[in-house]
Structure formats: structure tokens, C-alpha cells
Image (tube, rainbow, N blue to C red; front, side):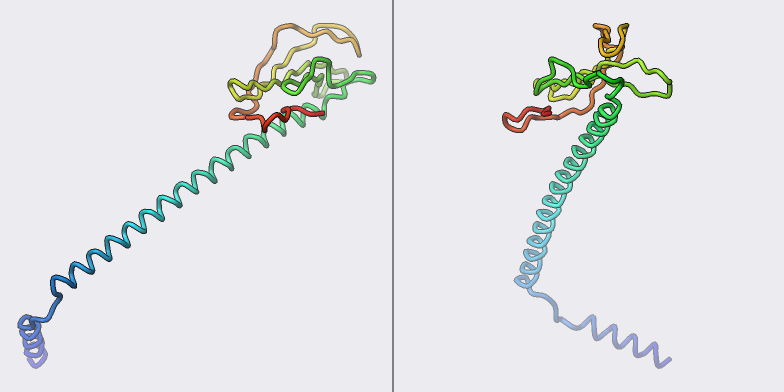
Length: 166
């Protein structure tokens, strides 16, 4: 019974106690809490913007790496025959034309690849034109592309530097 009496006495003492916060103290705490909340939201907004920027850069790097890997693998298979120049005439800073072929056959028939930078659409496009005759080094190619693939989008030129340099 002693413990119950003690608890009741303590509860009565707390209820009669008139100590507490004044209106000024309460307002000060509320203003401080609002300032801290605003600072937290500003920090959160900044972190979110930085995260989006980093994700965009990582995405662009990943896309560029895939496009370069595709071009590199096609260029590695550009030595199709002795006497055949892989990079063809009419290549320039916005388009590169090359012959390549890869596969498991003993005798490969090359394809003509035309990789073009489109400054209006900001894309790198790879068109493949199959060979329709001829022998090395005088192959002839179809005038109709058998496949067209966008290698990369959101591509932009750095100043006046050509996209392709060789």
C-alpha cells in the first residue's frame, strides 16, 4: 500500500504544480522548429537536384560507352580482306562510312556501315547496307539499308569540333 500512496501523492503534486512554458517561450520554440524544418526542406531539395544531375550524367556516360563499344567492335572487324580500305570515301566530320563483317564463316561478305550524326535530332545513327556483289576490294552495296539503329541520342557537338576525326 505504501507504493500506491506514494504514486497518488506524486500525481497530486504534479497536477498542482503550475510551472510550465510562458507564451513567449512557446512561440520561440515554434519559430525555431519552423526555421529548422525550412532548412531541412531546402537541404533535401538541393540533394534531390544533385542526385538527378548525377543520374543524368551516369546515364549519358553509359549510353556513350555502349555506342562506342558498338562502333569499336564494328571497326575491329573492318579488315575484311587484303587491299580493302576499311574507311570509305565520302566520310567526313558528321558521317563515317566503313566496311566490316564479323561471323564464323570462312569467307565473309562485308557490309557497308554508315554512322551519321544528325544535328537536328542530336542522334548517332548506324545504317547497314549489305553487299550485293563484287570481290575485294571492289564490293558493291545495296542502296537500301538492311537495318537502321540509333546508337546514341542527346548527342551534341563540342563547339566546332567534328564528331568523327581520323
